[in-house]
Image 1 (cartoon, rainbow, N blue to C red):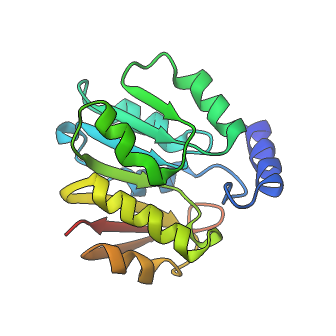
Image 2 (spheres, rainbow, N blue to C red):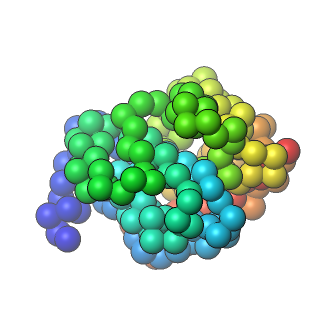
Length: 188
């Protein structure tokens, strides 16, 4: 595990725009991020910025057998690791593309909407225009009353999330390095 943490830190210093953390997310953060997801009734699940796959593994363990998981990872070294680890899962699609293009991939599989989008993207590392494009694309891709669940290390993204989603609840976990805020946002 220590080697994974060191690799993560190395990638963070190499590519700060797309790698927003100094180490993989904790189990505690994963639990908070996924606790309100209705896996039983979710047929289309999307994950943005999975890094080394901490949330991905838990999603795969919980998702229903008919669900599809679309995993968007732009950082090539992480994408290649994810592809290698999860390629054998027929329900999982590892995508090396921007989260802005989520709708294209969902529609290619004849799905209309995502039930839930789980995001680890470092929104505050991006310029505001890119962040708004990603959030707007997520909102369009979600079904009515669908959920966008995002974690950040500060409250800076709250105003942007409230511009797109009707309600945003916030939880905090200290059991992560660094501690994190979990935003649960609902589509109008």
